[in-house]
Length: 297
Image 1 (cartoon, rainbow, N blue to C red):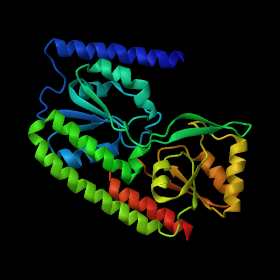
Image 2: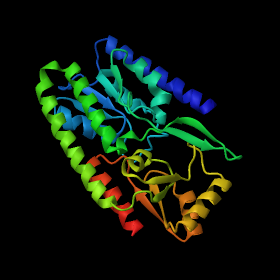
Image 3: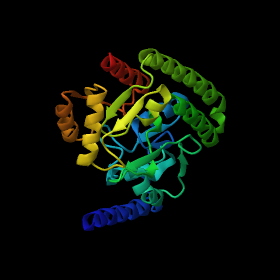
Image 4: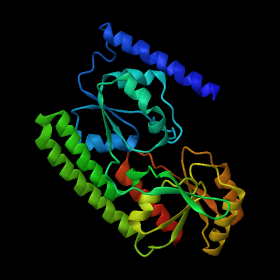
């Protein structure tokens, strides 16, 4: 706790220094020619650029290879935050909730938009020792649902128009083109998963919740409520895997694979890495669907 406190205190001091430099006329990133938009994760950068074109510089807070659940801001990111006109939040990922106030302190004129607002969200549930389920939060992985990405695209189009009214027509056209592209991705995924509706996939971290909901799969997660799996829960999942002859555990590329490896040994199966934060959103989702389909066969 002391370490966390000191880390956040240092961050606040750095914010003060950056803001002081702005007020003295030495604005960070002063030579930037385009307005800066912050996004939380790499797929959002893809979504925004599909609609905005090159009208904005889109800066991603969570860098490649980092976990969106556990990431903390680094001081070098303050320069981009200080000059951003807007921040597109994904909604409920861990670092957004932990650092939202600090980010606001770094740039109080920046507008903040929550792309999850108004969407059909899924509540995360934790299973207690007595078998009772309790809600522990909201599943944040909305970007892995083509249906929800369509809704986010419309939100992004409206926000960009608000920021830059002169771009309204091109944002409308690009948004429509992108929605058609998303629809084609949805069709390709449904072809890959046709006939497997109702089948179960086992994941280490519940990152495929919305993907599974879109395409009729049953996701079972080793992690529960963001916590490491208990021996009892591992045993329940192992029993399910053996009963349904499931031989694959899917795990995010940036997570520690040790628990998943041990369970894979228990069921005589294997670990397959997936990349939920890939910026190549369309091809990545089709690839995930193809991988799941191949392992069902």
